[in-house]
Image (tube, rainbow, N blue to C red; front, side):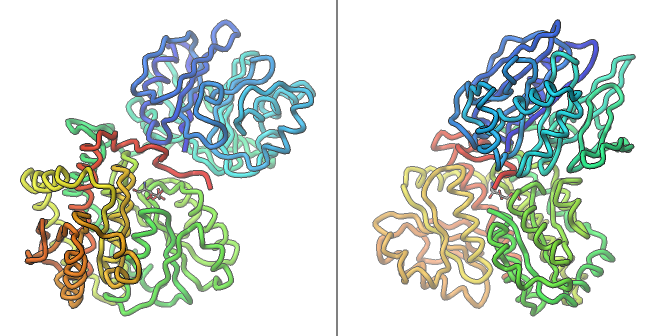
Length: 591
Ligand code: AGP
């Protein structure tokens, strides 16, 4: 959450470049944004509430600058709390991503001699640096001293007007350096995500935890614990700019849903030796835990069903934020499988720390290469879905399910069969995503978008998918939605059903089909408007969305496609910017 950038060069004006780069980080937070540039030894600050992509700003001068797009944690959304924050003398500007868990005690001390202007935790950083500079430290030393005092996951970038330096510190939140050399002009970026500068350079250097970097023509990296300089390699990354752009689509969400035509085929293409190697580890493990948050947690929940059906194997699902309660069951032979699109989710990282401490082995299923989760894990499966920018996860979700299925089939010694089934489903999803299908779902959205409540029911593997459906609908349409196991309805939730309440039944052509249809009949007799997402029509359905006739496990993928589209259209009919739902951010890097 929060996107931060620093930009160094000697010739170009930095503001416009920072402004464009910041727009690319907007998915990380969009409550407010700000800039600090340096000109003639003076800092120029610009701050506004709202989205940078919708803003008009007067450029401030200077070739060095830092910028921030905020997802508010400490302090209301207003200009006062917008980054950059400065020291008392207005010489040190700071942009920050993370939460300083001990900021109250630090602030209490600092307030004796320093004037605080905001309610943020961040503001302690410039004042601490100011203190250490006054004590005779140089900027690098002052930043190391400050950074190591902060508790929690943090990354910050500092611009100092006296020394004309940009220095960044990382411990727990991502920072990547980008380097460009063109016609005698050197440019250096430091940002929370490659996306910020992908259109400028693909040459990057990764900053690791407990490191700082002095951002200059040849960036200098230092270990904050030893103070020793670290040599880093320049890595050329493969991502192309188009994959991170909206193109002709009105929203990233729709683009990313449609991209499943390709992403499913791409993700199946995993190294079978690696799959078999990990499958062997799963088969020999003492306890297997799938952990993740939000939608990724729903994929983990689905893994329980997939492994049970395909490999006759019990695996546990635990939301990453609850994982600490299970630490007593972790031994070195335990396998923890983390699923995360961003690879930066704070609760996942904390859970993995616990697993590491107990000596357990970690496997990751991640979309973002070189993200924090991948550096902790012993083995990584990259889902290769390309950048997912809409806050609502779509293409990453189905790709994650594919990896889980491949692992389950590999565990069962049926990898070739699994591959065949998945290639078949990728083709079927490709057929589903056509304009007529979209229109059919759009028509449904038009009928129900004014409703206050939507319920989704499913049995077996479609139970976690019902839960995921609710997340999707809620986050982009703000309609209250809840998913239930079909059998649970009559134990309480059915009381909520009244005339015309939409109830979506996720149906697969499996043994549970008749039971979920019975549940649909129960709600229909209480007035519900029943929407069937099913391979066959049924008289109980008031509206039918046809899905391909596939096996029970694979129904988890094909049933999600119409739900993703429905959520998208519900959100747009209700007039929301579905890519940037209120109060949410794409990577949840705080606890
Ligand atoms: C998905 O639509 C949500 N925006 C959210 O639940 C997300 O899945 C969750 O925050 C986990 O993110 P991650 O996959 O990057 O770890």
